[in-house]
Amino acid sequence: MRRTAAETEIDERSDAARIDVAFESVYRSHRSGMVRLAYVITGSNEIAEEVTQEAFARLHQRWSTVDHPVAYLRTIVTNLCRNEVRRFALERRRAPKPLPDVDDPEIDETWVVVCRLPFRQRAVLALRYYADLPEAEVARILGCRIGTVKSAHHRALARLREELS
Amino acid sequence: MIDDVVIEERLRRMFDVVAGRVAIDGSESTPFVVEAPQRLHRRPRRLVVAAVSLVAIAIASVAVAATLRRGPKAPQIAVTATPTSTTKPTSTSSPDATWCVAISRSQALARGLAYGTVIVDNPSEHAKLVSRAELETKGNPFAGDEPLISTHATFWVVELRRTRATQGPYNWGLVAVDANTGAVVTANEGPSTGPGGVIAEPAAEPPYWDALADHGAECPAP
Image (cartoon, rainbow over all chains, first blue to last red; front, top):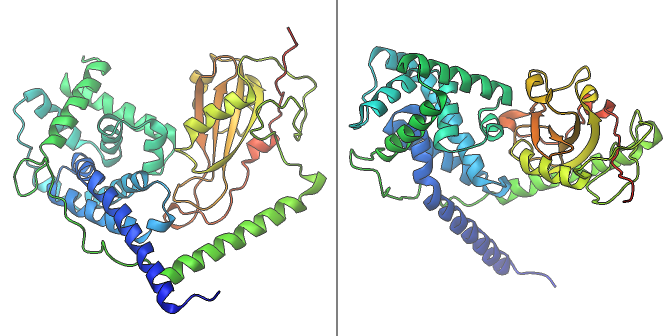
């Protein structure tokens, strides 16, 4: 039985509506988490917002081909953060980043050292200790080997140990 | 000198506090104002989706045809996830005897799969039972992990291979599981190819895996 153009259009509309509902659900559930992740990597509210918005836009474009939206988002957010950190690295060297409103001197001190770490080391710390991800997933997100993650992790801890002692 | 445990604890606390202070418009961050992005309601491009599906089907067909054409010169390696098979798998270098280990092939496959899906999405999985010496043969992808490997004697090496294009960045993963305790000892992954980490065809087998012998697993009846 041939389907009419009107029936096909109705089906297409309902498919699109279903996609939008599913996407919005992911957006509502994970947007704040992604902004926070981007923030602890970049240390900038503005960049964190932009990066998250862009990551969701990309997710929406690829919605039908992405199996694990949250894993995809984490990867995109981390990669976009890397680009932003590179772009603004020079400016940051000139103007120290304002610290968040934190009263605890221990946290304050740790944050200062973490902000001075190279991108990969900081991202590894954020993904391990903030996002609680295993090393294999951190490696997948950063597009490197597990050994590289271990090495970056080790170096970051060594630097913290040295500077906080 | 501060202990690593103290630093790790401090890092967790710091990230929680700092992330909790993320502010939009300078105010406390929670709850976030949820607004849909501008491109939220864009309709999917159906023609593009259909074209991508057709390409994926064509690639899968070619892969199946290639597998069928392999014949006896390049036998399909290892045994798949069939749980209780005691048949010795075909391999490029078949060992003489099977070994008796505490962890079965299917248990090893389950552990490898649970660990490795973060490396390779939707993989096909195979396992081979090997000794430490065999695991550490030339070209093994676990170089640098000798301190981890040296305390174990026999391993199930679980190979996870991509079966279709996904957003994951790797072609394949190898997970070494202790054949007597079931502990995941180490793992490594194969190279990624393609723009943006997207791989459009099934993954090739790592050469190291192809050459690895499989001792099978068979225990004498009690």
